[in-house]
Amino acid sequence: MQTGAPDSGQPRPPNAAAGRAGASVGRAARRRPSVPVRLSADRGRFEPSDPYVRRFWVAAIGANAVAELLRLVSSAKKGESVRLPRTLPLLLRSGLAEVDQGSLVVGARMPLVPLELRWRFPSHLIEEHKKHLRR
Image (cartoon, rainbow, N blue to C red; front, side):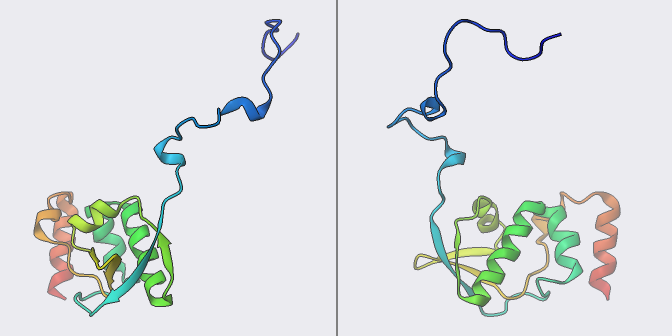
């Protein structure tokens, strides 16, 4: 029994011929620009490492957005630039990041999940959030 592609009689192109010179590159393959990141004054109530951030912000905006936010905070503390986050529009809409004079600005502390994002919570998480706020 023979496995593999059937022989068409045509020679295979070399690997370098897979992409033509001057051909457009897909959006996902392009290199994202680096942007400076800085911390703003504390405007929230939770440290980025607080379980609240991972429990409730992940439910509101997703794990990827929270992971990128934590990466932005860490880079801002170190004074490093970062690749433009793929979830930046979501972080901007949710108020977790803003753009100021060509820099991304993130808070050193995270705010409560706004009411307009809590609608994504399942009912058990809404109750858990209420209990968490009463502490």
